[in-house]
Length: 476
Image 1 (tube, rainbow, N blue to C red):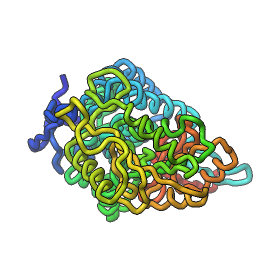
Image 2 (cartoon, one colour):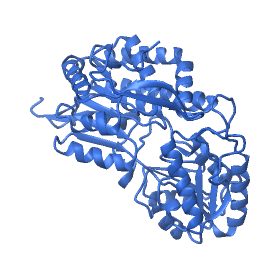
Image 3 (cartoon, helix red, strand yellow):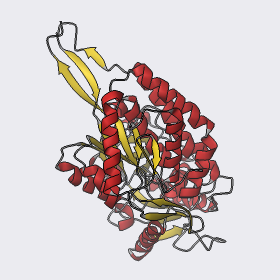
Image 4 (cartoon, one colour):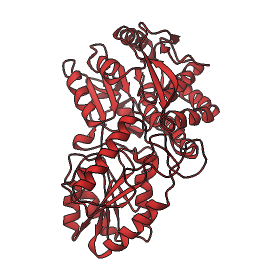
């Protein structure tokens, strides 16, 4: 069994330079189930050196060679699919059905899609028929990849796979709160037999390894998913070395429910927010409801929230599990209490533990009504199973309220009027707009406006993030 105190550097599992242990907590029972080591500057430097050395030969591999490696990785991922689901369920408290059918499946799906996109991607092409200019797409170099705890393998796949596909080398720093899935993924990389130094993993926290990666002079690019606060720090740390910085940050999505929405629009919106225990950056945590159906919508929302069960991750079913940590739990409870104190109506849930669960970071699905967009619960990213319902009169008012935020990741709207849906979607300032519950297709770009970040992940756009573009003249 893998020694969780080791790092994967230059094709080997190695001991950390210094022993600095960190317990990994099971959020279902608040007890440690594993211990990892947090990396030091020496560990980061060793990984960066290995990646720089490997880049010289890895960048010269052909697309066909890299496809072969990725297809082998996909085969191994499928073989060890069940192990990955168990690791994710244990480290973040995701119920097994969700950990299997959604969380772990996302890693497989991204692998399959990037393989498909890579097959059709042209790394060089002539500018046009009359020109003597040629365009090359070349790997940017050594990449520092910093991934979050809420969608662990999803975000690892969205960063590691396109970096490998484009000929880059990398250092992965997963969240120290949920690192086990990343270490299992490193085992898969090792099983494939990627060349030494192409992929390296160093565990650590943001202050330590995260800061070392973002400021390192020999790292050419940083891709980070996490909080907006941490994204600002990474941008500042990276400024002196002028490296490329790609950020997928927080969100405060709005879900506009018009009077002509389909029958179960409100109930589906509640399920969307509460899934993953509310721990998704593009969750539609502000539901805007047209006043003519406001009372019915509130009744549907409360009824649906009360139907959602909260229970242990080890159990099968469509219930939700705990939030990830004591820190997150305390923050969410504080925001629920602020909603009450600011005068919003607590219509479902609340700060008390769910019935029968006296240990673990469990939070009841919580609904606030009579919310104004000036309240903390409407402004701040809660990152838990909490929804605010806000009434509106006109289409223009709904658009104004949704856009009245510093974020811009994902927004949603529900209407049977196609012309209105298209009109409103174009006015919402966010990287994604989801109409009538339709999901984004595989290979479409994901990312945000404003303080939700910059850059895009997924599909061809995800490949291009890891490439430099070169013009060569005098080709003919």
